[in-house]
Image (cartoon, rainbow, N blue to C red; front, side, top):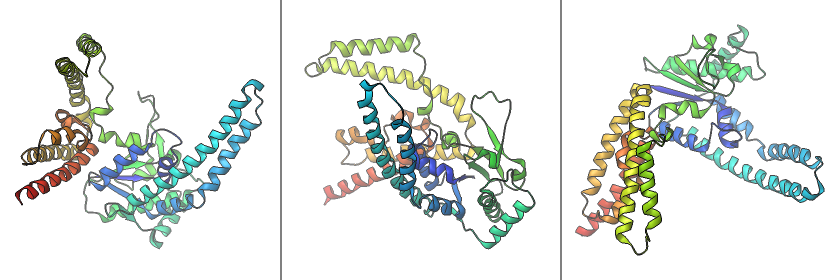
Length: 370
């Protein structure tokens, strides 16, 4: 089973949206995976307390930080002919500050909702953990004596206690924190352009097998779907299909030429099939072999259940062309043929959506019988 620890700074990054790698759509994917049971989110109470501290007065902090930025702009001499642009930038900063503050509070509510979910394993900050953390610091069992070493040590000891109590014989921990210097070591001589880290040996010896990440984006590679792959290069076959679709689209008067519209749509569908076939081949060859076995099994199970739900939907008396036309929005706009290759979080959402769609049609069938 996979377990994920998300550090306070990652949640702060999600709330602030100050840098890429922790966007809100990534947080949503994490939420779906955690609440759907694909992985277990393990959060020490220390993280709750740190988040609470960060939310003590964010409005004043944002006002101060934006004020510093405005001061730099305001004291910068500019050509008099663009003084109006300078003033406009100052006004826009006020607007951006207000928007960020509002978004910060809203995302904080979403984070709290997830952390308080019964699907999340919360680790109480007990007197025992506090003492263990202090002992670890005294014996120099932390990689770095940073200003927040007390909290970091408490996080480590919380995780050690948690994994000592569970029954899982082969747990895998996904550890996500921006503070790589406090928890990890850099892995040298990697081909990747990005810096890669591993949990520091002094911590790794007390924890289960652990993978270290500095961004949600990297942690969620195990949730990769075909959507994350780059578009295939425009080879001769794709160019030919694109040219045909463009030609039919430019020649057809869609409002009056039904036959021309049908031909155009067939050309577009043909282009989609070519591109999706290339993506499927790449996904099967490059992504599926890298996915954890428990994720592959869960994916296969979900795909079967989704196809069964689609079959049940289409067997409903109330199912008609209008129902079929609305189906894409219930399937997160994933083409039916691409369901086996979308992300695990998408599969979970699609299954949940289709259960609701089937329920609606069953109720419509019951009303028709009455």
